[in-house]
Length: 88
Image 1: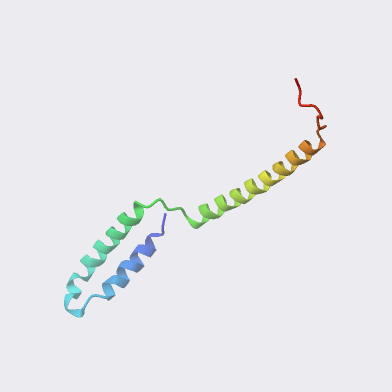
Image 2: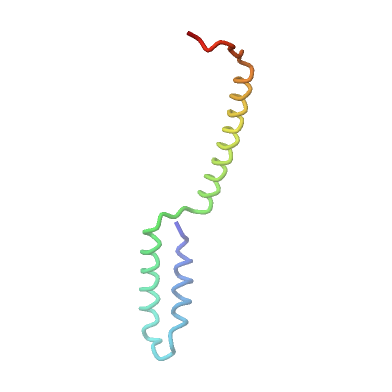
């Protein structure tokens, strides 16, 4: 999940964008902005960078193994005797 400090930073930044006349609403606005961001991002199917990197490595290993198996199959097929008759 995303670090809670990110939400705090974003809501604080949004709060600073408010005009000076509404500074008394700043805390309420920041709280609501943070809650809205957390809710919206919570609905997304996100993964951490670490999880992404792990899955990328798994995918690379799987591709490597698939390539090796394809090469082995080609070698085995090439070593099979070819039949000159079609059977029957």
